[in-house]
Length: 323
Image (cartoon, rainbow, N blue to C red; front, side, top):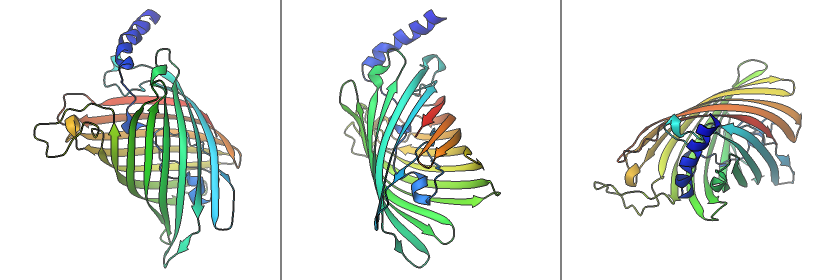
């Protein structure tokens, strides 16, 4: 069995060596502050598809500006890190992800029925694949965002912002992906019981990206396509989560839906529908640190647009986080 696994991995190495990269369209991105910052709570919630929810910001209060900063580290196992469609192509691996982030909120502006708070932030994440032969896929991600958050008297929280993200290969030192992402969103939380909170979140935006993917312009395309815009897309994201609080333990199941539509090259008219189910269990050590166990499952159904490629996939992961 070990020989078969080694042979399967060996057969994929030429593909990996010649530029296959993790799917940038499903890579976790930081485009807003941790919820612990925006809500003023010490218990964090996050809308990422496979997040440990371990970010515990350190607050540095001043009169009109409130900076925050933090670190988190995740060790996880993922059964399909390259989003392969065929189970025969799955390459299982452990992964180590480390994130440093910082930001600030600025003096809030009160209007008739809402309070609007500006935020700025940035983060740096390294992702390492621990399976032998996959270290050439290790990459670093840099993100930055500017966001306005409006807390309305109705209980809804609205947000609008723009973020920047860039991935760089650690082996070649070359940029493999970058994007600007203008977005809007809304969130509503309510008490289900004394110890249970329900959270509904919806958002949407446009990923104005450039990548090293070599797309093939379609003959009937009316778009200007230079070969680097193949991953540009519009998305709509919706999710519902519950938070069960037991003393220092927070249990958070979440179900999420993502719809994406692409416009350029061989991805023109491609549509993705992604479903995610996640569970995280946080143990709050103190106000600036917690330990988390997490797990998740994702499934993508995709129409291939003008390409015969199969973009369907399913993936599961689980791990531990400290932050």
